[in-house]
Figure: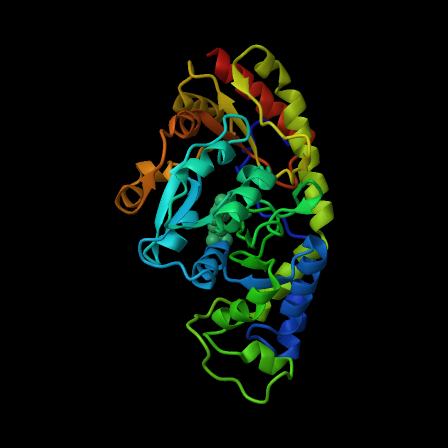
Length: 381
Ligand SMILES: *Cc1c(COP(=O)(O)O)cnc(C)c1O
């Protein structure tokens, strides 16, 4: 790659089998949801994660909305989560009239600070929603034991967590529910797409119904009943077979994709060590008892730097770097619908200094060296 070529922030990776599978779905003439490809994806996800049931959805957002329905979240209920997350984590519950209650994040992993959760619980708390930021696991043992003692649900926003583990368990398969995203920007993709992992047996049938317009059609397809009828509230949360066909090709490659992403991640980590040693930035921290999926490489710039200038400098060098999130408590809807339990100083400071670097399959070691050099120059300027 020549120096003048731009390095985009993301480029979706395709295995080469996607079109072959879509062609088969096309030839079979079965295009609605819950056909052969959806079943194959479900089986692969179940054996890969150990969850009881993996139901494909249109998105992680849809999977989170399903959890709000499944746990019967009501007007005025509270759901404890970080403010440092994507809007859907909160929006799925606000749609049911619930109030997201924000706790601050840990400065090391940027995950919800588990030591702040207990204090944030009230009589109205219905669930804790840990978000595994950058595919790096939250402290699930602590979170699950707090939830157990207080009789509240744990709903993992594992949108970024496909392929990561906490003490050997797949993210998304640890709490009561887990939500995966297969959006184009994630590790495993189908354009738009997601899955709800149902980790409690008694929620499987209700989840299948909510996903199928409130009917027991899934049982009908399995031949367990002779007609299907309206049973509960629900919506249409299931993707069609073309999406599932695409996804199957990706899921078959999940280990390869994860390994290759982690390899790129490690190259960044090595290349940026000197900038951390000189106090110019901080690299990501991966807790000992976890494995991560190389979803994202970010750095936290020292507070002396103006991030916009660093991004502009990288842009001038042909490198597209980005930032996120605008903390939800600072957003217009967040101020209207949510409340914060404690000060959110880490959230605000880290969100201001976080810089995300390009990471996609097809990048070369030379690309990473070029980005590391450009960043070194940018932080000298
Ligand atoms: C991407 C993402 C989502 C939303 O995923 P969709 O599949 O686009 O709905 C939710 N939460 C987090 C943390 C995400 O990164």
